[in-house]
Length: 205
Image 1 (cartoon, rainbow, N blue to C red):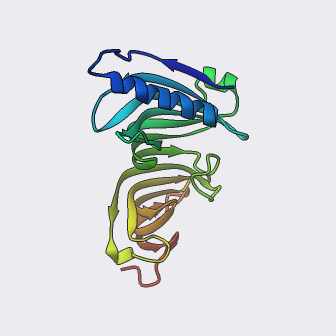
Image 2 (image 1 turned 90 degrees about the vertical axis):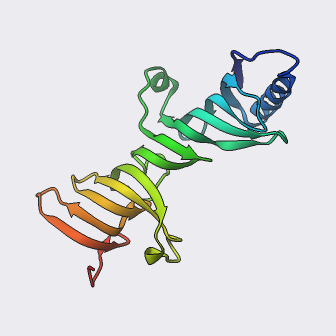
Image 3 (image 1 turned 180 degrees about the vertical axis):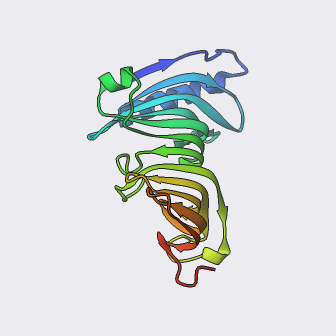
């Protein structure tokens, strides 16, 4: 079933293009069975649509709150950009109570989280590591010193919290310590140095 609600869309001659874009949005909503709430549409060559999108998937209800890039040629990006949230629920009851079992909250670029928090990443298919509880991303940057066939030189800086109580702070790739950082184990012992795909590097320099 598809639901659609539009709010605060001004119908003036100057903003007539908004109506066309809204009709295009309705068309795609019908095609992909989405619940979409449009809160504000701004008229620019490459503008953003601010609203809410709810997808009923086989394994969860996926609710996205934020802004979508929409270009003048009528193409809308599928993922959000700017500040937003991706929330995952097991049922409509959980969604009404706002009790997600996992989420991404922060700043995005076409669906890629650049800064923010990822909670229960394995359960929401953000990572394949079921032992990771939460990831805090402070920034993403290029580091050619760690350019490999796996990382492409992209590193995050922040913190990783593990289900067993261990805690890592520093550089990482995806969900694994990679680069300079400190691992604090649940017994309060620490290992500081250079990491390589989750393991302390042999040279540790």
